[in-house]
Length: 265
Image 1 (tube, rainbow, N blue to C red):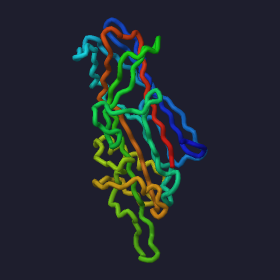
Image 2: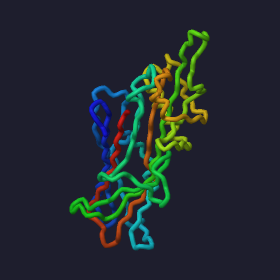
Image 3: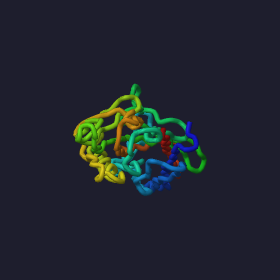
Image 4: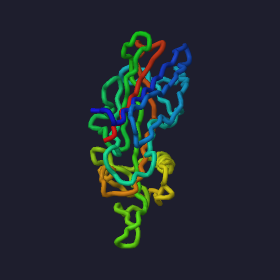
């Protein structure tokens, strides 16, 4: 449960196109708010509002008679991003973000049966409703990709007279998911994570490495008070959008929502 002193970030993405005879013109909106008295992380929704045009002539019919719109031209949309305000002297409480996605109060579920909500990649969907009546008319499917990295700086060891790097890292480490899975993230996302790591204030002074060399580490490291000089970053993106609804329920205007909650512990 989120309580005072924790961070709760709610983001809503709403797509509301006006359906015409030939084109759907849609708006994809990101908004949200942050509640925390002294957050150690900084968060943002990286994409500005989107305006989409969908040509109804591009729809195909699936086996159930639904109109299906594949939207490869929408590309990838950067979604939730975050990084520590500054290099942490040590790991500890309030460092580990727990990130959960939902729509209309229901957690996201994999589209494919037997899939997993853990790991760096999730194919999922959110309900699409008639914006005028609130009736459920279809779904918006997409791929959610996310990754978190951390790195440790060089601390002077008075006993050995050298550097004390508890993690033994030569670069950034990809943090495992809550379920223990790691997996590699797309190169574009890893490039963005490197940029976000550089936004941790004090990375140069602490000697924080900003190059990932294939290493993985447990998220428990963030809560370990024995680990010093930690920098961290998180990034996510949405891609491979597909919109569908039955032929007899084509809305004149539609909406869909995606929410994410971040709790620091």
